[in-house]
Length: 163
Image (cartoon, rainbow, N blue to C red; front, side, top):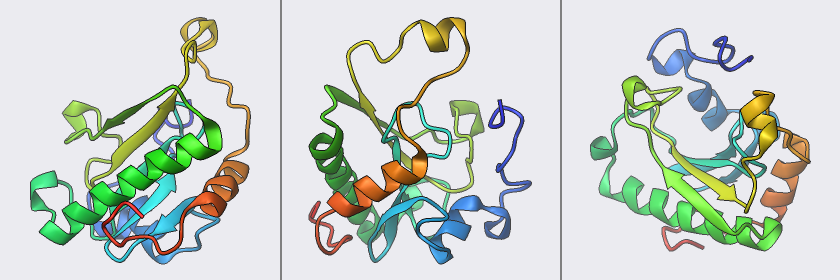
């Protein structure tokens, strides 16, 4: 309900009000950053669909996928591949949802700063609790999830090779 109520959503589309831009320059633990590359970074979703729900973002405040530079596109893809590998190693999900919502009408909660979702999925992870109770129980605190994934992240992030 906090998310639906608009907490932590930017007041406007400027970089100065963007929580993702604050994460670019901020403390990794405070902003739930798991890994950083040269042009992109990976952080936990503050309002996750499932445990380990990551987002891969360019450092630059850009809203449209077609506006990424070729270097940003390669690094975003490589970090997404690494995110899938790390989540498989740490949590062993049965599958993944990968995707971007371009624009508010398409479901982007923060449309002004592009972000690629990496959502681990397990058989039965959509049970009665979110359907009937309108909430989702996550078995781990976000800070603990961030620490586990950051510790499992391989070497130098952002080489564009999926590390």
